[in-house]
Image 1 (cartoon, one colour):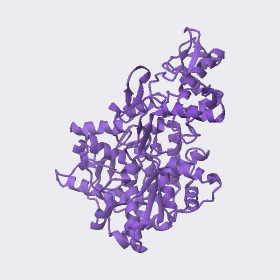
Image 2: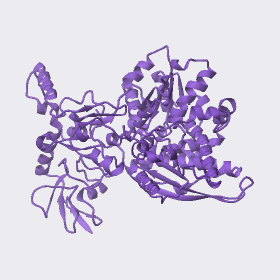
Image 3: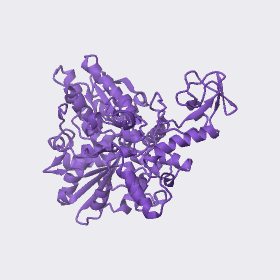
Image 4: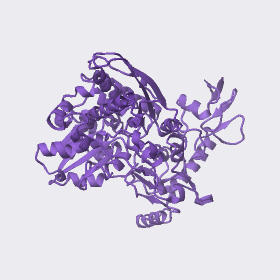
Length: 598
């Protein structure tokens, strides 16, 4: 089928909208409410207006289905005038608010305002400078229904920036099924908000912040606290960096998604004042040692007929997923692995093993995490992840916060020399790198569990069957008979990303129709590389590029199994003993709680 757009013929498939066809063919049409990950389009921003030969007046291209013989005009004087008028209405409430905005320089509304040459002076009378400033104060003070929500430790909301595009409502409902947002009030008082405008109470995944086109929803900014720590010479400042961040943060500095900038991150942190920089990919390997051991224990008990063992075992490195179980499915808390996340394992090792090794009081060490995730902020504040009131991780910042700090300090990130993580807690394998992608934790754990069960070393031990971006991927992993295994063993596994898919597994388990042994869940699209704290924008194409880079890095590393990490081996030999030891249980494992009534 064919359609004519701006006097050129284009092919299209049944069901496609005019906007989709234009995007595929690089025809610019402005929009703020539409996002390819969130369907259907609602046309609420009224910026994607076009003319057709079959409609009277202007129509929204995001809602207009393509038809044979349809002729579309995307640019003319009438269209330009209507788009500009609608954009001015959206921009008016933002006049004068950009300077200190967290999204300044990376705001879709701001970008369009610049493109359409809309300026703050368009909304302030021609007065002298003093009068203009006074007028701006009035504009700010007279905002209607302003709601600022900064109660939780992860997400910050300020609806003075909201353009009511409804993206947050869609992502929370469609992808995460939490439904924390909705439309409140009526008529000109209508605003996006939480039910009854109560403080945000959710799983803090931050997907609302990723999809928000303005600064109405952002991560909770902790850079002031980080700068205070960096300026405190009485404290040792130790940073840790999550596996996925090295493949994403370059986007903040104009590099392609998936560009590996591991060395530049370390260099930047050194410039910012870090004393030591450890790699959370090391603790990802450590997590696998404990998690694979726990999985083997549960499978063994199940094989022995122990009906009390909770199966399937769920991964526990994603704090939003853990919180989802605690809040909405507490009957399955026992299915969660007791392993702490890599962030918390590394924090624990820094404040015990490293502190003891260097004879430093743990309270004189400050641990700052650079994470892909907003809920890591919540996790770092969990009371059970502390000792005598001293948290294992003092502050968790997102990749975006780290980028802002680098820019604020005037560092030329792309030109920084490559440096290395401090090795005592900074050596990693390909298995640890995989943690950044959906299916990565599962594959890393299976590599170690497979060799532990068979007592054999295999050169290539990849589990490509669980890779990809399918919502739920299932597989039966057959471990053959070996010198340590009397008969073949089949492990049934599943991988899910996005809470809507995890929910399907939980519903199946609740019906007694689930026979998996091991399930990995990541709350965000594509796992951590689509986390709520990652660079903006994101979409399926960007996440695919990030994922490709992760698997390329794993493939090219000399050591690709967690149990072959020499630094991890040394940690067990000199300190922890063995996976599942009494000390390992004390420091590397945790408890979960029924939060359904909170």
